[in-house]
Length: 175
Image 1 (cartoon, rainbow, N blue to C red):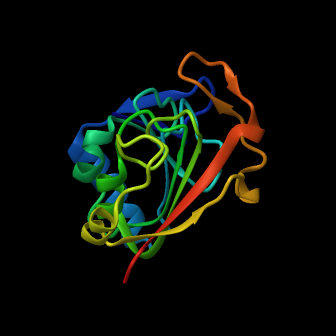
Image 2 (cartoon, rainbow, N blue to C red; image 1 turned 60 degrees about the vertical axis):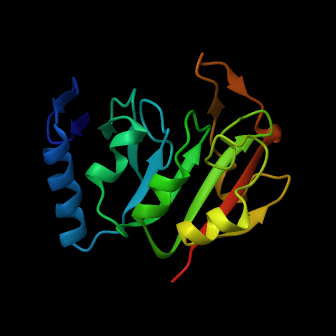
Image 3 (cartoon, one colour; image 1 turned 90 degrees about the vertical axis):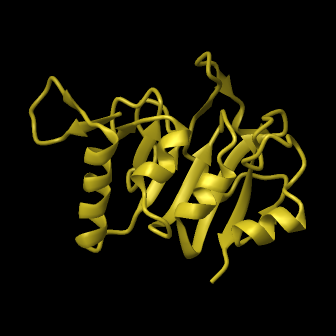
């Protein structure tokens, strides 16, 4: 995993972090009282300026696999999680690190098999799964949340996904 060393002038230097170092970085942000906004599947760099980028190809933020999410972020530590164009199941891990009252935004088109954060494809999680994860579905409408209108969505091959085909699903972590 990697985190960009923002204190260095160009060219950008990237410092490799192990899971423990990444955990310390996150713990420091929490101790400083910073809101934790996480952009999983953010690509090389998050398009959300307030977010910590978390992706296996990250050049800014944390370079890691989704499986490492819970090893880095403590339970109930993230205020908000954004997942645009998810490429793997992540709902269970995201739910475990989301604070009560926190929101999970998933931006994906209908063709994305991880549209609801699971491998169920176009089907939302059933009531039993949502209850177990402490989540409730707030929104599943055929439109993109206006907050994300300025984002560019891409497939893994780099080709652009037409913005008008992307929908936002929103879950809230119950208190």
